[in-house]
Amino acid sequence: MSNLRDLIVRWQRGWGVARALPVAEDVGGALRVRCMQPGRDIEYVALDVGEDLESLTTLAELVAGEDAVTWLTVPTTDPARAASALAAAGLIVLKHSELLMTADLRGHPQNMPVAPYRILTQVESRRGDSVVTAMVRHESGEVGARGTMGLAGTDAVADRIETMPAHRRKGLASAVMGVLARSALEEGVEHGILIASEDGQRLYMTLGWRPVAAVLIATTPGNTYPS
Image (cartoon, rainbow, N blue to C red; front, top):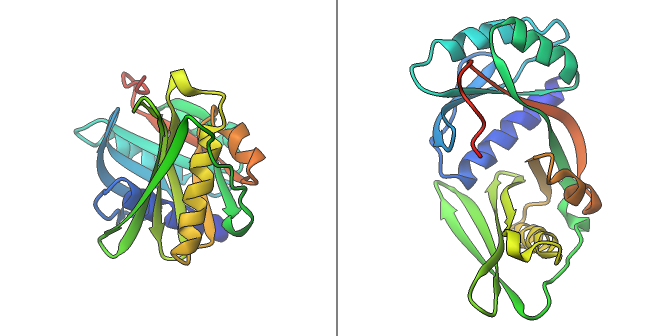
């Protein structure tokens, strides 16, 4: 569990860099950040979900005590028991099947888009770390796909990899991931981390990413996952 805790801390740091969030606060057993993202204002990321799952009761109380829409994100190797514990603690589970995944970027596939698409990248510094953005454009000027990587320490955290509906099934998301990985390597970062939605998991696995833990997202009753 200690190795998982370290990975969660590193993911949260890189994710915060990618989204320009304030530095998370360690509240004991979780990281808390006022993230002001769609569908939630505050997020707790659980760090020490042991086999007895007792920490989830305490974290659920913290979530319920917030005066804004708050999520509890729970990486776990036992998602079924964790979901039951969250429900018993009074929370609802919005997502059951996301995955914390890692990859060695040195072997990441490089798939460039073909005409009429071209891909552009940009690297910018952000509070001592770096952010890489990639965008695929159609010759018409439309954005076909895009994504971001937060480079923090030795890690590159992929975030918001998105293909627009009219441009799907053309390999654009693979191209975005490949150019982000290449840019990270050029910046001296070799270790990739991400949390994959259900929709993205097949893509990432074909690119060599491997699951480490399931990720549950819970909140107080009445809140919903943003569409």
